[in-house]
Length: 204
Image (cartoon, rainbow, N blue to C red; front, side, top):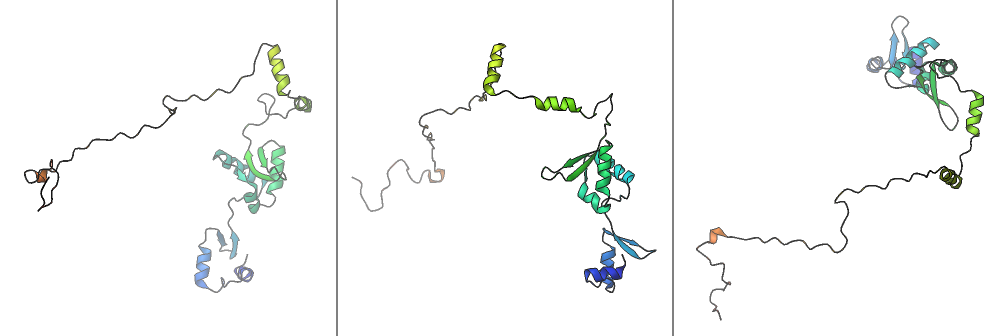
């Protein structure tokens, strides 16, 4: 995009204000081509083909994370279609939203489906048989176990640690500690063992 067009779209003097232009060029998301004097936005991923997309997905998966469909779509609009093709080819796994089934994340499929290693789609016949099985209710299940001499397992009760149980009854009163108070600085001056008598009064 030309700088003049950018100034018109954003309604900013980026083409005439030198300070603003320097800050604009220094932004980490701005790419300037000095040959054509055009500016473009730096995306998170430089993807322009299906092969480059697969390489990026592989790199992200090896780093321990998948690739966001929304983010990669900003770089290449045809990315969702290419990801669906890669999914059909068994190259990637795609996670989708539960509400409308929209693609969210894509991961590289490191283990390719083969007859020897597995990973092949389950046959429809087995799929139908599996989902056709009905789980018996609790009463019938207990009867079936009893007929075989078995019984249902029960959840183990939590084991209390020693000393964890509290004793019932009244709490014991806090023990009074006897404290001996000494006034060493009054030793030889005042007899603290006798009651205090104010000056000028007589004791009975």
